[in-house]
Length: 269
Length: 364
Image (cartoon, rainbow over all chains, first blue to last red; front, side):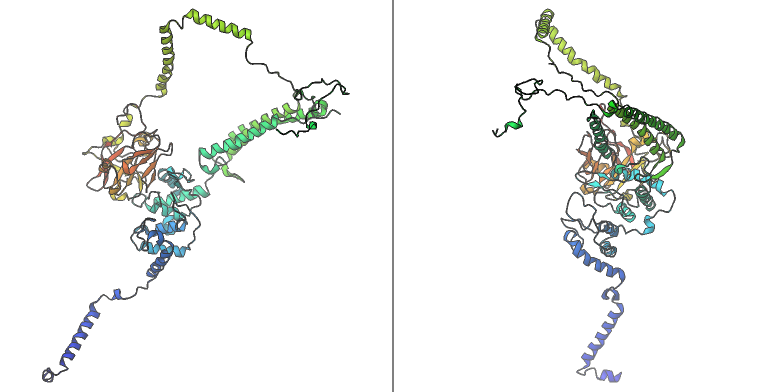
């Protein structure tokens, strides 16, 4: 100790003190500073979001903005959730071909893997409905179809027709046919309310009821018998009337012409 | 008109020196050629062919009889619930198919038999039916005009103006009796549409809004922006269990009480009165169209339009359900809602206007 105090006026003493102080502060920083922030996040989810962002920049950002904040050409995607992305891209509605009253379904150009990445990115912008798993949209009870039929007639039939054949709305919009729609996409549409369809959140229509509706729609499209034979698209009086006028009356006119035409004559020999 | 029409295209003019002198010589090139000579059918000259045609017609009538018997038999024998697979038609009801086919065959064979009979066996000798002028000859016309004039002069129709005018008046009023008869179409609704189950609600005894899907009372936070929910009245004094589908008068009751609940960002609600009737943007409208009472709920969540599928009446739910298109004469009635202490949506009074179609005595 004497030796140390004896050298305290040494020209290099200040340098030594400074060195000690730096080491102490550096050590304290290393001990207390939040270490995670400095590390690069390399978890699978983070990579997915990162790749999704790149895909988004190429395919979606021209309308929805580089960070999904929306623009005059497309709405903000903050809070729409992964289910909305899975539905819109999975059914080919997005990217939209052209602006109009309603974006129609078309061929999907993204792989499911890419859709998942896009969905992960959009989901990271804000909390929203999550893409359902197969258990969520597959009903297990035996009476699901009949219960689903009741729910369908209360909640869906007014727009999508009593059989899910679809129908017209205002100003060029329409409720599409549900015939060849994937079960997952029907479930997601109810969750998210795409375009002008109202949503049916779990708070007013629990998961189980959505399963029942999905079960009914699939049954109606694939297995339901058609007691009358010719369904004519199940569209109701429009197609039936058209069929009656064109084919029914047309056949009657043809028969009338045939009846009134000259009968084959036999030459008197 | 060109003059290159060659003479050989025109009908041949017969001259007197023609060897076939029996054709009347005329200078009219478009003379009525008359009917062609009647050509007999095979069945007219061949008795065996005629017999065969007779048997064919009888066979068709016989098939028709058998098909009718088949119709009755299938009606009795086939189970109405039986579903069968028939190739181009798919899974169809066996009874429907059998009834349609047998009745169709029965009717078709009668028609086909009758047509075959007419074409092969009934006389087909052409008969001309001469046209004649529609008008009567001059003598009759002059006589009728003379009678009319005499009658008019005798009645003094032109001279006695009072009789003429009262006659016109009485003739004009007679059709009104037909209009009055329209009242027989049914009793007037009177106050029935003014009173719904929601009218029982008072601030002291409110009625909860019950979700049609889950049969559970609804909380305000359950109704998300952009969602559509259907609701019915919950327990009240006259219906302690709330409106249930098992109730005897469920159909009558729900036809007046049905609600559609939507939620709009409060800033997007254009009508201040409508905003005040809602609760934090949750609006409860009647589901019954004010035109002829169809259930309407074709709600577009972006435009906030609700469309009636019957006659395309369109209501703007963000603007007090104002009619923006179609035949409806009134906005949709709205229910004033709020929440109770536990957060459930409640109504404390009835609709702000009578629900359903327009009628003469409608109060609002």
